Image (cartoon, rainbow, N blue to C red):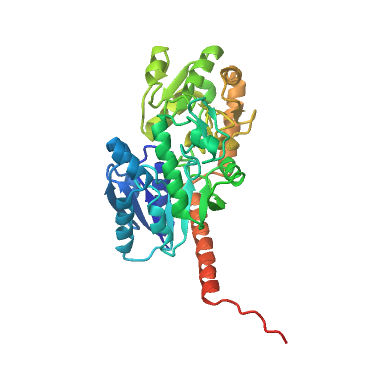
Length: 419
């Protein structure tokens, strides 16, 4: 089987890129031929070096690096991206059996969808966010610091000042959403959800686009080792971008109320504020360094998302190491946390989080939660191999369905004649 993975970057700067890269590697290790096409030239993850993995770049600019007017027009419809992608697909030595799109908002734009849909090859989109339906991609009101319940592209949506940057940015994103709907037309898209909450949310709304829903867990590249000893840890640890919507400030406030240190791995807009308040901020670290910090320092890992996050991967990675997790119910990965048994699922509010943190001051409870987290995760681990096999099964299913549709179109059944 030949699979084309299409992403915008070839190195993991976030969860979506990480999953795209790891999926490509897992599929190659599972015996598939993989072509990884990335839009933007730049750093390349070593995982993309494999005998059955070919890598191509479209050498496009990231729209955030462009002047404002060019960024706006390219973000709505990037004809150059469509042309370069079509040429790259035409030049492949072997026709792909499936096309898998992971990202499209930073360089590719909706313009690539007619190219992909016009190939007559099954197309899959993994939904790492909600950009397929929501203009700002996250169903979140940045102006109100709360989740958004408006219908996408409704009148109320169009007038809402929900964009994290400005109303002008909102107009561009609305234009992109409208272009997306026109690009897809009446075609039904096969989409992969990485959490149950994402699937339920998308199935329960009028998306403006026809969707066929599939569910596959993200891969977690954590080797099975002896479980960590969280009762020896001294801090609640947050790993990720330091932003209000991800709740970094909530961790700091709740930890102060609970009398526990908070440790932050990452950077972002809240970094200076957290440092000024006396928090320990380590900045970005590579995965091996993060694992070492977690095993040495963490009593628990906290992911207190204010917005509807489809991840984050840090929840799975913490559970795999035997660390309790404190997660927001708005985090998709919270579905893997058994409240009161492997951690706590609490609302993203300082009082609720502080209550969970106070409970974690009990060494016996913390140790018990950690052991249960480890045992629960490794009963059904989200390994790269399992992820790849799930993808291959989906590709085969979609390939068979595509052949049946082609046969039905080529050989219509004639109505029985009246006797």
